[in-house]
Amino acid sequence: MKNKAFIFDLDGVIVDTAKYHYLAWRELANQLGFDFSHEQNELLKGVSRVRSLEILLDIGNVKLDQDEKEKYLHEKNEQYLKYIAKMDHSEILPGIDEVLHYLKRNQIPFALGSASKNARLILKTLNLLDLFDAIVDGNDVSTAKPDPEVFLIGADKLGVPAKECIVVEDAKAGIDAAARAGMTSIGIGDPDVLENADYNLINTNELTVDFVQKLIA
Ligand code: B16
Ligand code: MG
Image 1: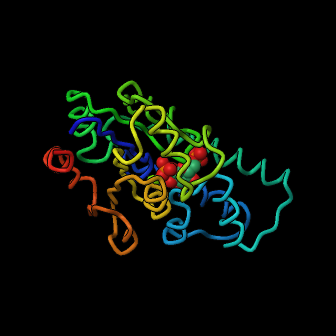
Image 2: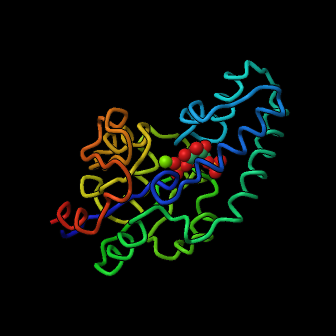
């Protein structure tokens, strides 16, 4: 168990912010004259804000110039932040609070590795920010998952070798990023989608203290 560390993704692992991203992107799509389904929203999970807009515009077959894109990115984020502001501790996904506190009590370091530029604000809103030993978010990286940068910076900040890090992720791009970083991965969600994960859990209910203890034993 010595020198192990964890790196957690945010959206889909710690909290389900995907539903708020969805509402804000759908409002933008409607404003631009097309609809945006739940199924299509799956394409945006784990993807950066800028890339998400490109995917959305492709779906609606809408072309925008750079200034318009900047304007809509800003508007979408403002709308998203309104939803985030209403979140509280009760929205932390099942089991996560217990596992984070277990790691803390046992001095096993852990970091956040998220594509979101709002990650610090969200953790603060959930009252979790101070628990983390390091935060790496969308402001800290130049290349998005599946590039391993976000997790390698996380390992570096924690001072733990990559091979001792365990990544918890819900997106295929994140599992691939963990593999490219040389880290162990736990995939949360559909095992067919997350087939490259070292361990598969259907949802965070299965990420129990017992599971974590056995993993690091
Ligand atoms: P923001 P994660 C990702 O978070 C979300 O899954 C993705 O849908 C979102 O576009 C991205 O963050 C950027 O978020 O607009 O807040 O910067 O899963 O990497 O924690
Ligand atoms: Mg995610």
